Structure formats: C-alpha cells, structure tokens
Image 1 (tube, rainbow, N blue to C red):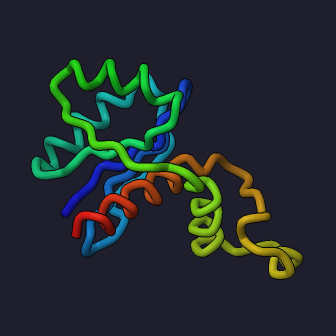
Image 2: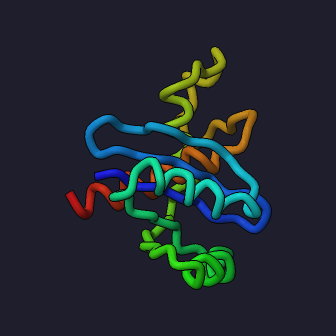
Length: 130
C-alpha cells in the first residue's frame, strides 16, 4: 500500500510518499499553493496511492478546495504528530552532545518538521488499514 501523506498548513504543508513495505519514498516541506501539483505528480507515479491528510482545523478550507478537484482524500487524526515527528527526526539525525540527556520530544530541530509529521500521519493510516 502506498500513501501520500499531507500535514496541512495555511502557508506550507508537509508532504510524503510512504510505502507499507519500503518505508518513506519521498518527503518534503512544500508551499500550500503547490500542494495539488505534488498530489497529481505522485498520483501519476503511483496510481493506486491513497491521499491521506491530517484532520486539523486549518486543513478544512484547504481540503474542501481539493476535494472539488476530483481527488479523494482520506483523513487521519494528527493529534501528537508533531511530537512523534521530533522523535523520527532525531532518529535520523545526530543529536547534540547534551541532547542525550533529554527525551527526543523535548529537543527542537533547526528546521521545520512538517514532512516528518506527514510521515507520522501516513504511517498511522497504514497501520490501521494493513
């Protein structure tokens, strides 16, 4: 199962393509204005992919616009996805020396973690449906 995960935001969105077998294929932080272009691009590459979006309040207007363009979008609870995204980030990147004394959820990355939050949302969907 391939899932296109979206962590919606007003200005920027986290975006990922997650495979239930191979893991994360692509991820990134993109402009909200270019979200539809990315969805179409990866739906062409992976026609059976499911588009899954976090269900935050800020996503309602954004998603209503895209549902009218013929793209079916599933929703997944994104409660706590930012904290889980921090844990994922610090698993892939080296912590500062003092960071080993703190839990990963207390460390802040030097960049936006919207793409990792999209991975968390996609993995939650995969875990429920596989």
